[in-house]
Length: 303
Image 1 (cartoon, rainbow, N blue to C red):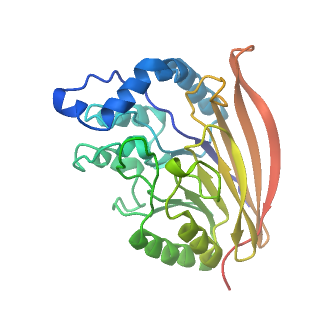
Image 2: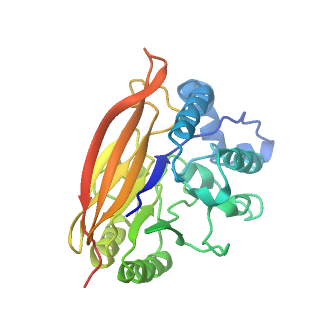
């Protein structure tokens, strides 16, 4: 069977100078702007992101999967700028995006915010829904939104009961058809993966859906380090792979920019995943191979 390759990275935090109006200063954006001024603008490097994108292009993946935090401050100007950046990566049908907490720092009208990213956050027929589903050969990409505005000093997320119900239904349908289901979400799903103030509030409910309906693979961002966690599925373990920011310089708090090339191929009733991790090497001033791993993915459909 033909293999499908996915390039996954997360949290690009596109550079954008936060020129806040007086009204915008009386919001959570002010804290993010202060954080940016105090050093985050140095730890998040746009040229590093450009090199990562070039490295991804050289690998020629079938599809790009980006798990949130494209913006920094949820300012109206960031969303069209991000749309232009996404347009330059690859055709819209080859790029799938889910939002992160920085993309929902404050509430915005749909047409000012995520509505501009609809080409990369929609079902195959162009309709908008959460979760959305995109089928690419034997692979089904399922985009789940965990992004919502939160009070200052919180970066938590929530999927919500209605979306969880729709997700379980869609996972069941896709599982019965024998597709390899890859779930994309911004916040980590595993218990204890991140501090409480940054965690997914209904992670336990999402894990319960995964255990009942099954997925074959979960991809996320949001954490400052790379993660491999094991989730319970109907037929065993579901790998949950997380990455730090794609524009982060390596430092005391950040593991540093990286991305992963995921090659998925059917093997009888199971799937085989080959993971190749590409890591920024400050000495070499280049992205280098940080490891190759192989996973057997059992079909997780509940029988």
